[in-house]
Image (tube, rainbow over all chains, first blue to last red; front, side, top):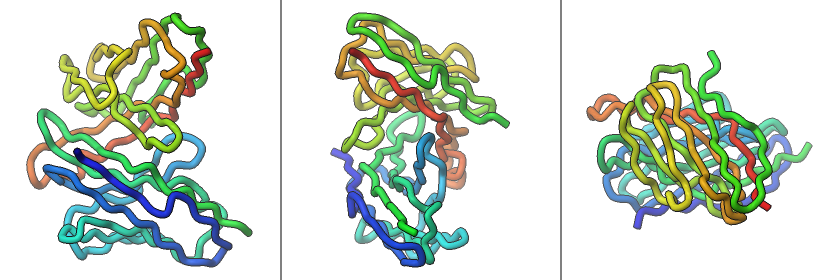
Length: 113
Length: 119
């Protein structure tokens, strides 16, 4: 059975800290791994990773994929209160006419002033 | 550009009532999806539509039906609501590219969600 596991489940940090969120997976027909940020409403897309060892970066956020060890990490440096959210990891699999996403349960990040 | 629009935003039903959740996207995407999100369970796929005129079951389809009305719209129907269907429902869409070089087309974009309570 395909599964995606995120850790930690929740995390409380202070502004300025650096955090690392983890995502491990076991799926058939892996195509890509995606990170989303979910505040009060819709998950919003952060990164799509397809190749091992190539870092994706956007401002203070960065992510990397290891396809051999089947995991990804999301780093946030110099955290701000606006980074408080649930961070979702999803693995894209292909098994028919379209892709499907298998989601982890998310990591709840709270950044305190 | 509105992206993915869901209605209603909130709904309270009594057990046994029926309702339809509406979803529309204006990005000319081929594929559309319905998920439910429950505490500790993550997002789970209910149904999806790879293209206009096709629908398929996802991980948790029982108790639901869907209609892909046209390329823009994908509705989710609860025929006889049960308390176990209390959840937050999200619609998503993607352009969908099946070729190896088209992976970026498979990014799914989400609506703002519908919070449903079944009493």
